[in-house]
Length: 238
Ligand SMILES: [Cu+2]
Image 1 (cartoon, rainbow, N blue to C red):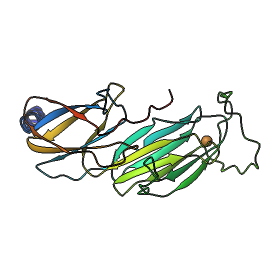
Image 2: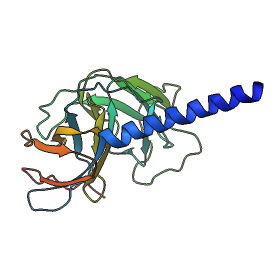
Image 3: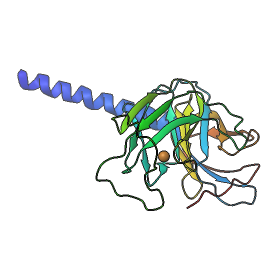
Image 4: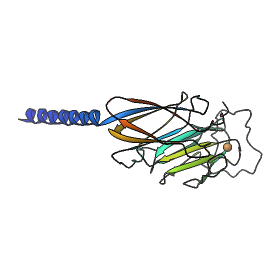
């Protein structure tokens, strides 16, 4: 009797998983987007957002999304998170950094959707990068080398540091659950987009004007699309 109960449970579980898998496979597709600049070259770090025919609200990331400060840089340069997520900033350098929200865009015309300012101590024993020696300034150490910030409004947040003016980073908070950023080859892959009409929009921190949206029809086969920015972003220092 007991044995039978267990088998029945296992059977039900298997059936449920099968149904779920079937549902996902039948009603969701993949979009592979290649983003190029005005000259046709692939562009990394472009935010790709998809609105599907069946609307859905983004669900916060289950765990804090980590952005580190390493060698006086924000790593990664661009982070895209669903709205409601928590960002965790970690200083991995031996010297101190700030994390402050800044405006985005080449003219600083896009205000940050969240304003914050953190000071993160350097980690003792971390590797010192020659070109960024610790500054000779009053030591107002915060006592922590990591801190968290929750982002609950969709949009852009630029990242900067008071001590190192060249440090730049970018966060984009997505209202849609279907988002990605382009990799080094300019490609973004978005999975699980419901079948039917979808609208793809792009965002790049350097853009001066909105990028044209693209309409796609999502089905069972992955969609490969190419879209061109209406400008050529500056190359980031390597
Ligand atoms: Cu810094």
